[in-house]
Image (cartoon, rainbow, N blue to C red):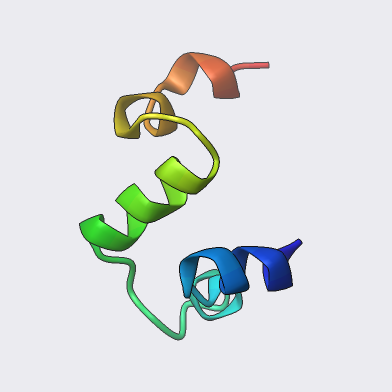
Length: 50
């Protein structure tokens, strides 16, 4: 999946996950667009409450 996302977005998710690179808001916006969620939805705590 990460390879597909890299091809589609040009974003190296592994570098973000490994904290080798800080995420910029523009990168986060691209990630949200790729996964078809809004930035507000990304930061919505309700979906993380179990």
